Length: 181
Image 1: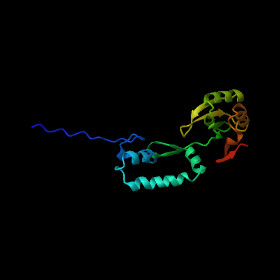
Image 2 (image 1 turned 60 degrees about the horizontal axis):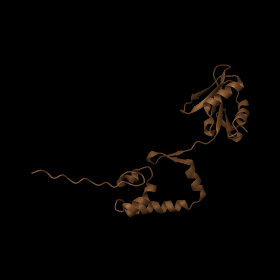
Image 3 (image 1 turned 30 degrees about the vertical axis):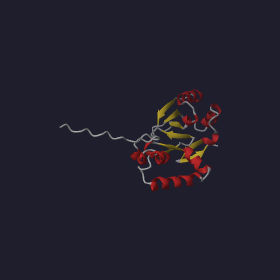
Image 4 (image 1 turned 90 degrees about the vertical axis):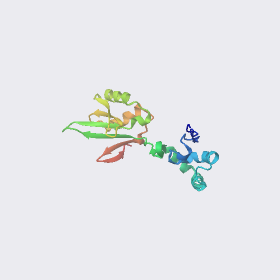
């Protein structure tokens, strides 16, 4: 009188995201899964769920190049979250420490493909000061240069690294971002 073993359950996995078909709507990109679901698993989701979103997607594609450029700026993260790309700009800020001591902070050079360690070494040699790469409060690396070289540094950056345009360099003065050009 042995009990019969139940047959194993066959699970249909999505060919796009790899999740079980029932869980695609909770995955990172349900819009890309819909065509596959319509073709391979029509009974899993109601037709109005698959159709309503696809018609909205078709309407958004006719919006033109503006929507395409928006998609380029946006990076998808797991769970469907969206992260925008950082603007390519170099920010120079002068921070006063003690009475006559100050530090010039350069942020954003790495966005132009500049190695920060090489840049800090060149800045230290050019201006005969100490320069180091440190992590800022936002966990991004920045270059701290001892001394007030904020106005001389713009010409040095544009001459040394031609990929960095002068229009992309900004100062922070009195809490406002001011263009260097």
